[in-house]
Length: 92
Image (cartoon, rainbow, N blue to C red; front, side, top):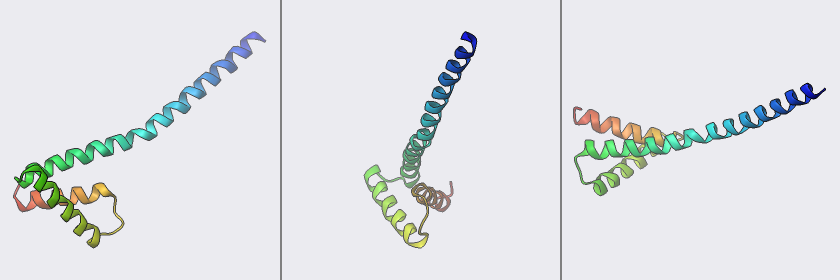
């Protein structure tokens, strides 16, 4: 009887651990997306050759224009598209 209780307790501990692991992994893509957002903005600043404040203003205007042209996309898509366009136009 004592062995059966130990198995149940161990299974409960395992289930609790897995529950918290799943919660942690669900939050991680949000963190990655934010860091990816910053990396793409830095690449845009570098590709533009402009001072960072001016480049970020230009990026914001470009993102707004892309949102009008391509509605209902994810925010990161617009930054990727703007970066692709500036790298393409500058021959990088």
